[in-house]
Image 1 (cartoon, rainbow over the protein chains, first blue to last red):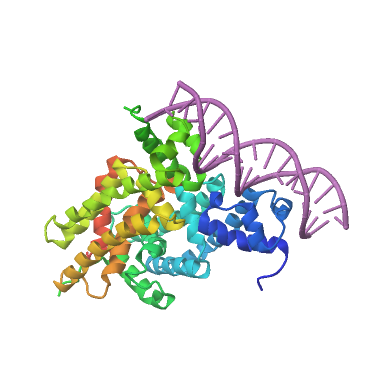
Image 2 (cartoon, rainbow over the protein chains, first blue to last red):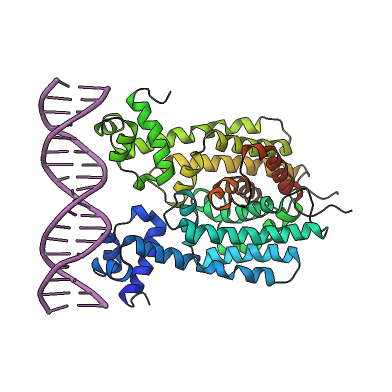
Length: 199
Length: 199
DNA sequence: GTCTATATTGCGATAGAC
DNA sequence: GTCTATCGCAATATAGAC
């Protein structure tokens, strides 16, 4: 399973190493060695280290094309919000490297940020903001909160849970078994807040 | 103002360059050149590139010692939450590089993560979680949400707003003039949620 | 303290054999 | 398609003059 053609192996190993150490933290020497292929294969298939990185980044962000499914999940804005949370968690579970590229590019952008990363993030935030504004117009959501601000708050909540894992794994379990409970709590906070209802 | 002794200039320029390009994205050649001092000064003062990075990182995270002030701002858990939001925003405004180190270390940890970064993050989350649990025991907050989960949601909301700047500056203004309004909206979302009150 | 000059290592890329 | 060998360059670190 882990041993197919050279191109695939380079993508596979490149994904892991670039995610863990960043573009500048990886050498094509170490990478090709880890992949068990010759160093010259990187230039042959990808035109160089940056070419491989670019290909990996594009593959990682390809899943953002599915974002539209979230919106089609019914016109109910509350359902869309829960769908977004589920979709995001599922994404991070099925691909543990995505968030590394995501935050690494936001923090120390490479030349590929503007073409690959920024549009993907923008699209998601825009969809969420639209849905929230729409809910506000229908009277479902409060009108004193901007859609984009709320969208960023929602995205921040969910993504930060995974981003902070390395620093907070001694404070709380990040196991997938608790995902359903996490979803329930984050939906609750975002829609109804932390305050107790009138007793 | 920008031209004092060599040690200070290396710290100053190191802070900016490491923040923008990461530890591996900066060479001591370019760094010393930008600082206008000789390359050997880095070894002389800091024992090498990693030594300088470590000193910069420590200086950046020193402000986390002030976190306890937030808690003393009165026993009211709601006031503590607003204080945290204000404190975090003030921190990012007065030091625009901090978040870069923060997320860069969470994403691609250096050898200094466990000694400098992780404890600082843990301390903040723990204080927030304690305050929230306390509020829940007093009946102010809902009891069906874990303190740590809520703390991570709060920290994620605020930090992500700044983290996402580079991707979302065309969607919303990140100007400091809007900070008060931002604080109001994030307090509102976190405590009362997005749902409209009964009309 | 600060510099120049240099030693040494590792980098990315590619030419050329197979 | 895959490899080995190598070129040219940039990296970190330091020795030694001032």
